[in-house]
Every structure is written in structure tokens, then in C-alpha cells.
Amino acid sequence: MVYLHEMDENNGLIAGDIDRDKGSELRESFQSADPFPHIVIEEFLPSNVLEICVGDFPAGSDVAEQKFDRHQERQKESFNPDILPPSTRQIFYSFNSRPFIRVIENITGLKGLIPDPYFAGAGLHRIHQGGHLSMHADFNHHKPMNLERRVNVLIYLNKDWRAEYGGQLELWDQGMTRCAQSILPVFNRCVIFNTTQESMHGNPQPINHPERVPRRSIALYYYTSTWDETKRDTTTQFRVRPGTTDRVDWRTKINEVAVELAPPVVIRNFRRLKKHLAGTH
Image 1 (cartoon, rainbow, N blue to C red):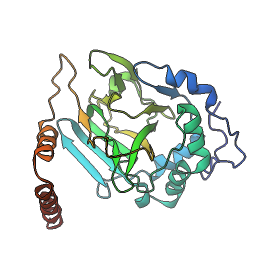
Image 2 (image 1 turned 180 degrees about the horizontal axis):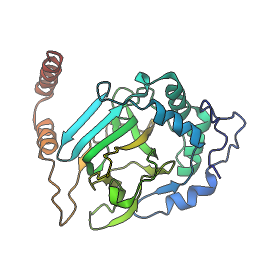
Image 3 (image 1 turned 45 degrees about the vertical axis):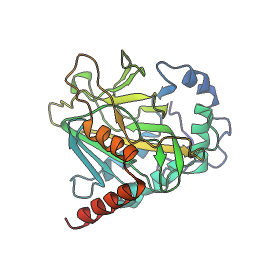
């Protein structure tokens, strides 16, 4: 049984008369989950909706909005929905619609969720053979809209994916003492979780598909208008698993110390210089 059967399988639109309480039946399971609030939903969308996304997935990397290839995030790409074909763009716009947001609010218990028209860091994600994403807590501030990040929604696009192929989504406790959940990224499996500095997650096991098929997913982020000057703006915070070859993200740590210690005028000029240098390449 498809969970969000109210979504049209041809265009991704959600029926306007969808039950206003849909998702509330999952809230208790969501809020009591270990190690932090989350839920895994099988057969989340009509399969044809995801087939559209798979069919529209860029074959190459030239239109990727972001590419990452360092120790903490290896062989990872993200594609903003606005550069994708209209069929997939429509589906992403539906993810930003009131009926879909209300379902996420009912599941999480968080009201007033705000979608991101910029799709900052969101969209279609791909990790190639040998790639991984180390354990981390996500950035917490949407600067253009001055919003606080609150919820992640991940929907997987990988058919016939086995544990030996790697890429499992791992959820760890805040102290990084144990992996509480290991979730295989199989087709039409959805994971929803609170986004806080305690929600340590990642897929640290390198992709190892025998036919070199990459790991693909849909990533959606939702916010609230609760950001204020008392909160500390943080970028992605990587953490090291005990007994592994994970590396400390010194680049981020050094940048954060520099921001804390340097006068604002120095930081502004440094950012202008970085932007200028990026534009000359």
C-alpha cells in the first residue's frame, strides 16, 4: 500500500481534499524513535512518480550545482530541481506545496514549516562508486530567508540495493558512541528526521556496487521562522566514529575559529575576496 496515495502518479500533484490529519498516526513513533526523532516509511510515493525522477536524473555531472570530493564527503553531487526537466520540477514543487507540508507537520509535530524555494543543498543527490558521506549534523541557518532548519526528508531511488553495496544511512547518538540505526537506501523508502545539532547522520560506508551503479536519492529540507540572534550559525558539523579511519574536519574548525576571533570587517572582506576569486575561474 502506497503511503501517500493521494499524490497523482503522473504529475506529482497531491489531491486538495487530502485528509488534514494524515501523518498524525505516525507522530508517536516519530517522536519516540532512537537515537533522535525520525521515522522510516516504506512505499512512500506512487512508484511512477519516482520513475519520473529516475528517468530525468542527469546522466553526467556537468549540470551539478554542487560537487564534493574530500575525505568527509567523497564523490558526491547534488542537482537543483530548477535545472531538471519539467516533469521532475513539477514533483519538487509539489514537495513544497501545502498538502505535502501538512503531512510532514503532522508526522513531526512541528507546525509552521516553511519550504525552500531555493532548494539550498536539496534536490537530487548522487554518490558515485567509492564515495561516502561521513557522520555529521547539518547546517542550521538558511541565510537568504533567515530561517532555522528543522526537518530532513530523504527518499531513495535505488532498485535492488543490497547491504554489501554500502551507502546505508546511519543514525548515531550525539556522543558518537553507537550506531542506533542502519537504513538501507532502497527504492521508495523515505526517512524523515528532526534536524538539530544532535541528529548525527550520514552514509559512511563507501558505495561498492558490482556494476558501479551510484547511490541516488531525493533530499528535501524544511524550516521554521524561529531563527534569532541568540542562535549560533553553524555549517555542516562532521564527527568521527570511534575505531575508524574517519578524519576530523579541521578546515571547518579553523574557519569557525577565524570567524569567532576576527573583526566583522575582516570577515566581510575575506568573503568578498573568495567570491571574486571564484568568479575568475
